[in-house]
Image (tube, rainbow, N blue to C red; front, side, top):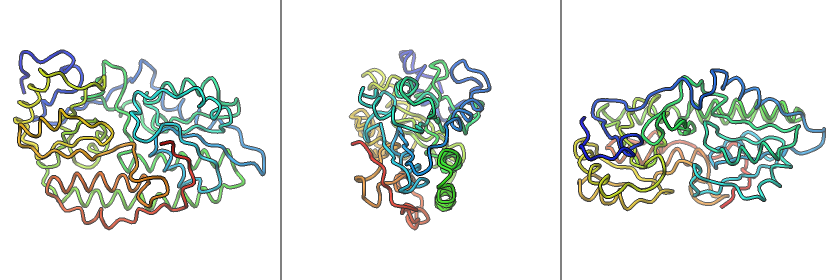
Length: 358
């Protein structure tokens, strides 16, 4: 597709390239931030570098975004104290931890983060405040080879930051669970059997989610499994489940598009012939409403990638509840049958006792 001559460099370089008709717009890179191919191995070693806690003591865990907090809580059960850092509903890409987070980190045995350059300010604070016996575990960086990083609309390769949203792919979430289990078993061997059992039970639920996503996706013809989103959170999901992310409207600087860019977008959306535009609950955008109104494309603004449903303590306030909601929304908006997803058991395998900042 040819862009309009007046399309701004910011649009071309970042996101608004909905030059989508021809196929996948993402690319995998060999080097995310100028680092070597040892990035994954180094991250894995760091995850497993923490020292075992004294017998009879309680493991102190900190986490970043809420989906990771929920996953960790299902593996740890009530055997650890879990404290989230990033408030739900916050833009995790621009989040800056307050100084009092340093106090929490100073008492933390292991900090579970996503990695892939998502939480750099929190990582910097952790580097200065985690105990020497503690560990910073960047789950995504540790489980995904650099060669599989995706650079796309909101995450252009020349920006140096790959798309970090691995957790929206159930297959990758399963890898998170396995690594979390291994870290907890090493650091708290007295509770190894419980962590192993919890991880196995939770993996079974994620396997069921994986199967339900596959079944529901198959109810859509390939030409309808195309996502045009505001926030660019589903690239790794699409790559494994036969979908194509045809565009993401949010610029890489996370500001709203300009009036000229909106005009270009309207023309591009008309050309794309997508059935729906999916907005984000965390990033409300009047721009999407305008685009939907002027193109006649259905606009749905309820997707969320790191803000769990409901409130802490609600049955749906979980990673499984979040994924079920997002994929039912996508499949049904595009005309598919989400029965397999609706039939999922999304209850946690153990009570979630984590602290979720709001």
